[in-house]
Image (cartoon, rainbow, N blue to C red; front, side, top):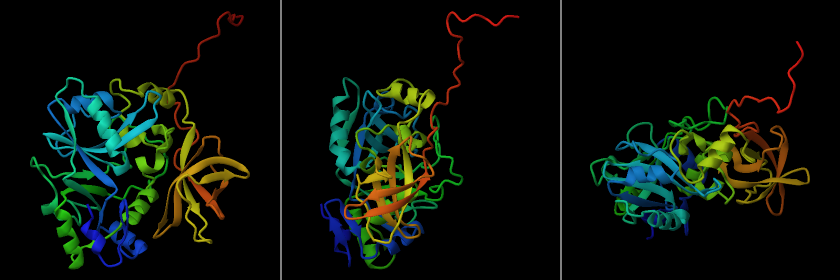
Length: 371
């Protein structure tokens, strides 16, 4: 479906949605101030109905969903047996159905996996293609998204409020930043009927609210150090590396696939990579692509996962680098035709994990000291 926002003056659109509507940096400012909405064409909505849905999700995902109350926002990951992130979803339950907001590129694979995992339980996963997702910053209520347009098929408005960067029940935060750069973001994603996009676009055209594109939304996310499936997941990612234990993992819940790795790394080990924020030299006006090599001297120590031009901080990026990379080292990003200098800001410290106090036992055969 072509978004009605595509016809706004200055709109630049690709296969993922409206990238911007003429002025990406100005759109960021309006979005951050709570005066604009961003149609998130790169998201999709999935739904899971059935009386067993919450206990079922609790048993197969990283999050404790068994006691999720109507209107409560959460986040979950689905891991492979080795603890690598396979899928991620923003989660909201309305008392009748559990709603997922997911990256569009992952939606079909996630839905297929959920369908395969039903067994004989009373659960009904489906593609909720009749809905779209609109992002905004909301200090109260639904912010600039008119409440009348928000879907509420069972009486509970479907507005997911991002728990990041708070530490959810059962979670754990590795970043020591105080205040955390995402603390004031107050991001929401409203699920709206597809037809509501016409009304929103009409409100923008009439000057009642502003519009922002995907570039603006992603720049605010990156500045808040917020991981996302389409950015920070590369097939090797474990939740610890991106500080994702904060909002998407419950460390005290029952067994689920990948839990052994989650517990072992958190309690006894260290994640092999760590997420960093890169402040990029903007002299060449080049923004690195996802996957661009991050180097320390001649050695490749990581890769860019997401990059953006921020309206206050300039060119920035998130990157996963080797844990051994010194936290105070000046790095370089290979942006194709040029090498871009990058100053790093530590998100996940090198000593993250190893939180269990394990007593040291005496070695077998060791003689006690003479009295």
